[in-house]
Image (spheres, rainbow, N blue to C red):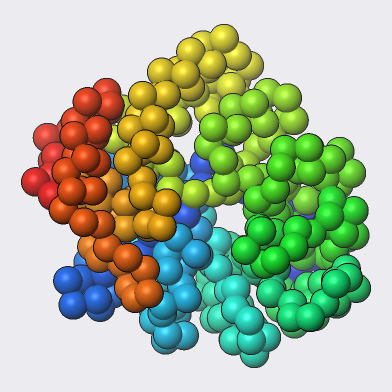
Length: 325
């Protein structure tokens, strides 16, 4: 590991910055891991799009459809392919604590920078704060690697800012992907922004969070590689302008992406976010492939509507990124 456990917070404060993307996991037509395509995507994101870090095998990456061995293989590929040039944060979320710790120890052993652990579904509980504190304390005590929390409505509840601030006192809790209303993550930033890096997955709120909340980290979703191409890196551009204090210029660049955002939004079927994003990747020349059961594939009509929106959204394409998908 690049830091000692007691230095995890300081290390993350110095190095966990910028734009981090959550990887969709490409599969081959027969639903195997597309290892070649995954490596190609990773290299494109880091070398061409200047993405700072990659979130591996999260919910967008369909971890729930993957075996533990497959998840570890995805971790290994990411660490091997980009570990020397960009950061990795490995999703070890699982309902089974033994699996979570097994994945966390594997991530630590292969030199990943951090792990992320989603707040678990807690059956029958109507008050869960002490259970959650004990949950994250156990993980913190079991591994040395820096840990990011992740609270999302999928768990059936949201962790309060006050609970997150309490958990942030643990020595190797370094960040949170806080998928909650803005007033909640703004409150956590005020309560514990000196102890934990607060972020959320909404790209549309990222600019405001840099300017108004002083955030340094976008952690993370698919927009960094869906809204950008090798020759059109406007998310990178507005981020760097905002970090540099060029607020009006940054806002103008941010707003110029509205047609791309709208093209994605209006063509994404409500039950098919991963399938839609993978098809958009293919239109950009990236590896996408099918989704695994139980997720639904796009219909041909949905693909046609998405392709039409893509072709008129205003993204500039490098020749090698144009796909016949």
